[in-house]
Length: 113
Image (cartoon, rainbow, N blue to C red; front, side, top):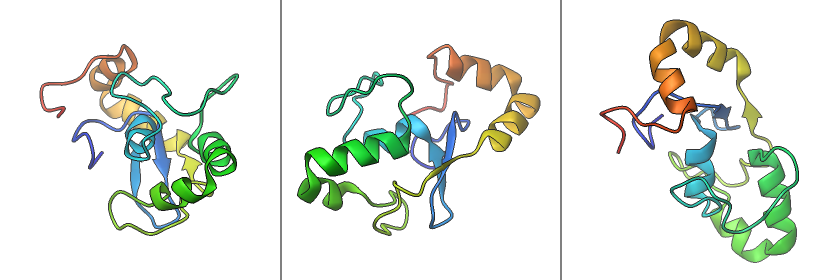
């Protein structure tokens, strides 16, 4: 992930082609704090980038438009069309099982910023 500089965890692909960890993307949008706690919107069930984008867009449309940008290339309007890349995560689990298990457990590797 180009945000945390660690193994991708719960990778999300954006329309522009960039891929990030789900929580890194939500932190960039100002929706999650650094512990992964929602600071803007609470959802029942799973928290996905698309659900957060929809909720944020409804609750604060003007502010959300300002934050709905790819952290890498700054293309706007990419969160609503984001896609969870489960096949990429499955490959990462096979290639780096220790790194993936560490991320799943809430840990960070030595090169995580």
